Length: 214
Image 1 (tube, rainbow, N blue to C red):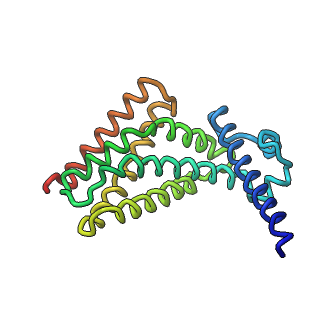
Image 2: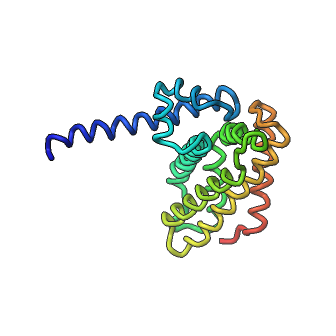
């Protein structure tokens, strides 16, 4: 038993490295091409693994693309957690909650993230990429984030935090769609200015809906 443990550990470590290499390769190809149009052979070559290794880890190219996007959204959510970690309401008033959340999300490079996702979804009709699946990934990430942030707040405010974080993130997905429609997903000074404008409109709408009373 003891003699086989190191071998098992090495195999597990190799398997984990191969999985990360495949996802890293998919991420690199998406960023280079601005879309998810690549073959299994191209992916395997970029990841420096055999074609069969790709399918040992993932059921299909769609599975790889969705997992890559989920990893990106998880990283973005983690940024949001960190940026709001010091300011999230604990014992204060509701008046500070929305500004604190907006301050956190404003410091994340969301246009680049959305541009990336837009590239993945661009050819949905042509190659079967499912917009519904991607929306589901975003929804699940948002739900998890809102629950986690609510758990960090004062008990009396947990429900409000969960609702407000969920509303803010859903609103981000809405303005993201408008941003992509108007910019084509291009990230430059003008599109960043448009994103700031859309985010400001979202915040104004949330503020009028939720009020600012203590």
